[in-house]
Length: 549
Image (cartoon, rainbow, N blue to C red; front, top):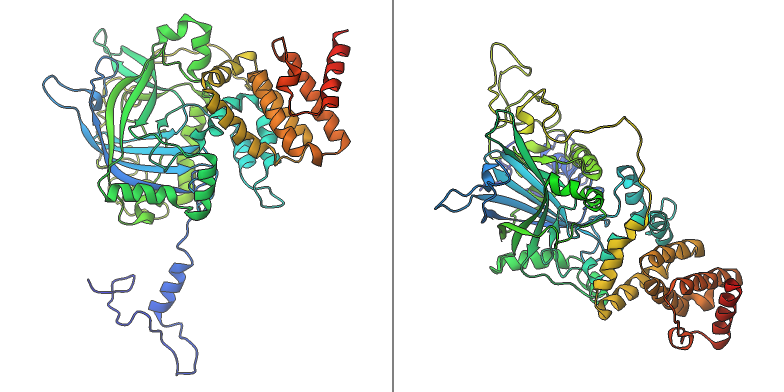
């Protein structure tokens, strides 16, 4: 292959540059040299606001179990005597809060995005490695992102800023418990599960009438066959020794033929099930909650295999664009509030980062030919020819979408869910229900898993400087379990007590009394408060006695 300029003209000796003489200046007329310098200054595009650090690969998704009983989407149909459909997939793994140069093993939630290239357009599955998320109120999302980024004055990650947000929004505690378990430090990008978190719908066309449909709500789960995590110490060590550990591990696994493989499942909930109980209604669209497997068992639908590395990371992975709004017929969105906000912000982020025509990029383009009325804009290079860019009567496009898919029908305002109420502004409130599932998770953990969580979260909480923020967060854990709160209180006490002022000690001591009042009696002071000096134990007893009078 011959070396050329950016416009295709041959050039020998690409490191040479035009000058007036051996001692004179460079010449502006040297397009080749100037073009290379100008291009270098423009090689970086805005990094993702979240999910900036990542790695990717190619593979395939194969349908292994028929879903014709719940959806008319033919991708998930397996005719009798045949095998299921197999489509190409492009996958990107990522951390969430870190910048593009951050360590792969930093404690974080992880992204797991999958683009399926079907004959009906691209289907994007935008997943996390946890089945829950921090918040359910979409308007809190900017604050959540800001709190996990850098302080505007110091430009440093700030534990006070981080815990100030989470202590004020206790619905986050379920996700916090997952984040500070060993699940927050997976052993490589690919040795973890993926979960949709938010709720979608499978739709089925019925034969009872031309417009009749049924639907089920569903959540997606992509489970690796090699789940593995790191301890906090291992993750910290690797962050210093090999910050690109996850990227390297994924690339090397595929290169040596150890292809990552996943089983894909769904959980489904019918409208009838949802109507059965207030409990089901409350968890259907609340991404801070899980759907219990006992009531909503996993149903296998297919497998995902990663078997090819990219040739050029920037072109093929960095320029990838994912959005949960990219759906194919009979797979639809639900009223899930957080999902509704993601439907906008994900594609809009890519319009800003990559340009309005980002889906024309080869790494994002569907395998089907695109025909619509969108034209022009920056970096538009897929031409739709001379056809008018409006609904013309002389040069018409065909409108032949699948019957009764959401984008193929009009004016059927009783199609599925019917909503009653007025326009208003909603902000959810915290109730005891928000602590039921976190409490169940705490009790489900083994003693070793509980101790690991306490150690991990204490290592971060000990960095908080503001005693009020620290106390507020431990009070959140108190709502989950008084035992959990006591363990964290004692761990923090042993690290920070001697460095505090008398006022700080007084505030923290009162929290201990508050915790003990919530513990089930009898309380063994000498055993459970063995790390405290005798006079402090006596002070606790006296405070409890006074409060009981």
